[in-house]
Each structure stands twice: as structure tokens, then as C-alpha cells.
Amino acid sequence: MQSCSSAVCILILLFNTFTIVHESFDPPVKVNLHDSATLPCSERCSGSARWTVFSKRSDTLAECDQTSCRSVKEGYQMIHDQYLKGDLSLTITDADFSKKGWYTCDCDGKDVCDVQLQIESLNNPVQIKPTESLVLTLDVSDPVEVIYNSTDAANRSSGQICTVDGPSLQCTPEYTQRVSAALELRGMKPSDSGVYIIKDKRSDEIIRTYTVIVQGDPPDLDRGNGAAVPVWIFVLVVFVLVSVIVVLTVVIRQLKH
Image (cartoon, rainbow, N blue to C red; front, side):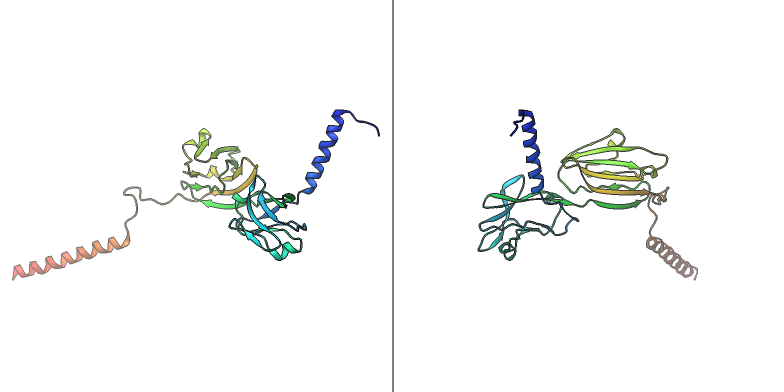
């Protein structure tokens, strides 16, 4: 057999390793937020099978043996009848963004399945009036960025406007005074119409999208005295005035007599 150079052999080894690892991964499981998710794994296991998060291998979520199955953490479960038939699938009862990522199933310490859980991004259409506030929801604790793409014909701006990392909020100068720590964008105007994207910086996944239209008249205000006077106060004032007039009329007639 013809020998290969060190560099070529290393490349071949890396390619074969990548191919083996890649083929061992199942396709990602995609579900909507708060739906139930099943991570598939078909493998006969005569010993103990358990699921863990790929990055926390010592933290067991659920496990089965020949006798029974048990949920170590709430919200994760395996079914014993399926386990006996070679179905080691893991069910996540309430999938949210904190649960997305890679999961591993092992049988007696040997990895048999690696499955990625993905949460479908959310699209929120929003229609608000000028001067009202736009509140953007953060669904993850990981660092995120807020990206804005304008749909206003006169305003073609787009790009990152803010980043959030825990309690830290950083925005471009244009938005620094308008955005609060809760990601509330105050004083919306028609030129703010557009698409606002919340993206996870670590996974580069879009978490939530807001399609915003700002139109209509600003909220009505009494320019002189603030809020309009309630009807019941007006009726009460009229009643008091009429009562005073009646009393005065009676007193004047009595004085004349």
C-alpha cells in the first residue's frame, strides 16, 4: 500500500472523523414554543440508558433500566415499554428557549444518540399609534442583539440597534435615550415602522420577530386641562346647582311673605 505524507494522512483522518460524527447525529427536532418535543433514539440497550444535555454530561435528565424508568428532572421523561423495544426517545413536555441545544443519550456510558432541539422563531405583528411604546420580549437569558430593518420608504436604515447581556443594555446613540432596560422603545413614530429581530448571539438563531406598523392619530388629550372630565362629575355638578337654585327660590318666597 502506498504510504501518504503526514499532512495528507492527517487530512484524511480528520475527514473520516468528521464524517463519522456527522452521520451519528440525527436531524434537528424543531417545535413551537411550549409544545411537547420528542428526541428520537432507536437503539437496543440491555443496561442503563440515560439522557443528558451535551454540555452537562453529569446532569441526568431521565433514565431507564430493565426494571423501570424515572424522570430525574421535571419535564423530561422516557417510557419503559418503548425502552424494552429499543426506543430510547426522550420527551420534553414543555419546550422553551432555555431547553434548546444538543442532547445525548448513552447506554452504559456509551453514547448512542445525539439530537439537537430547536425552537421555531416567533413572529409578532404589531400595530400601534404614534407616541405609544413598543415592548420587545426577551425569551432567553443568553446575550441577544436587536436588529431593525425599516419598511418606511423614506427611511432605509437597518442594522443592529441594541445588545442585551443580562442586566447590561447597550444601544446606538439614536436609541440610547429611547430604550429602557426592559427593552421598551418609547415615543414610536411612523418612521419607526419596520421589522425588529431578537437574535441569540451565541447560537446566531432568531428568537422572535416583530413586524411593526405605526399609524393612526396620537392618543387624544385635553390640551388645556389634561384628561377629559368624566360624565358623572358633570351630572353631579348640574344636580347641585339645580338644588341650590330651588332652595334659594323657596327662601326668597318665604322672606317676601
